[in-house]
Length: 367
Length: 68
Image (cartoon, rainbow over the protein chains, first blue to last red):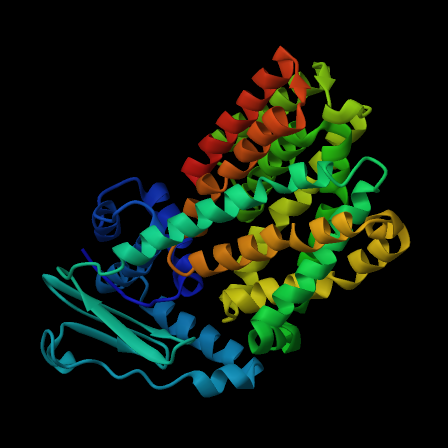
């Protein structure tokens, strides 16, 4: 197994996708496939293997200029963002674990990337821009990141469970409060807090002209999502609203990911057909909402579907901004911080009922 | 607001160790939790058609998550 500790996910993500598709298209045995098949499923390791796979293709002499191009594009984006440029240090190849780099069969070295390989042992390296470290690894080392991966899985499960409670919390605010105002208040205040949590990293994202388009697109998505999602839950029920919005999200995200390719995997069409069939089934069903609320199933489903499409924009927007070298906390702070003013305005205009009792204020602030 | 801030902070920090494709199936827990709460706490009643429909959407989601 390879291991590259501390390598940032977004720096290797693109390579992984490229490599993965290359592997699929080749459909034959090459170095890349061989190594990829040894990867442990899931986690950053798969993506790191994407990187290693690319470098192994370099070893085969297939695309020697690819590495140089990568390094150049990273330098270019560094120039656009002087704050980041300062953090990039020249990589220092570790001489200790495997011999002098000069003695290796093939050697590539750039400011941000280096790959050294020789028959039977492969060295990978990537400069970690966020921490200013140069990391390298060799075939045969153990992966030390298992604990961190498990902790991350627990974090995501905790986040998803907490998140699942929002619809129920909105129900207890009462039916006289406008659902759009609840969503807007949550997104507006949450966006400001996330922007503050990201602090300097948020400012770096906001000041980078190269990602401005993505930032605005993400902010529009977040605003539409917050308004449509709560309306969908109020009209079609918490259960259907959640399933539709969060079911469509990943389908749209997958579509955006494959948008540059000539052919989409057949599975995507199957999944879309399944989801659409599911939504049609739901719209034909009888639904009773709790608390004697009135169901408006078709309007609720339309709202939830709009929320799902805007939710599906997030992964694309987030990965584009992170690929430009930004920290995840800064990306979340930037996108939701830029999105905050419009929802806050909506909450201000429509949300009078939210402030009607101390209980409601508390419920909105905490939940 | 609390869940949103905690959720986004948790997910962004988890993204440093996990790939987006492994986060997607994990986040399926959200609609499941929401549905369980809606039916048990809020008291929503769904017809058989809606339950089948939910099953269709969840299976499609799992399929897409595996292929990412």
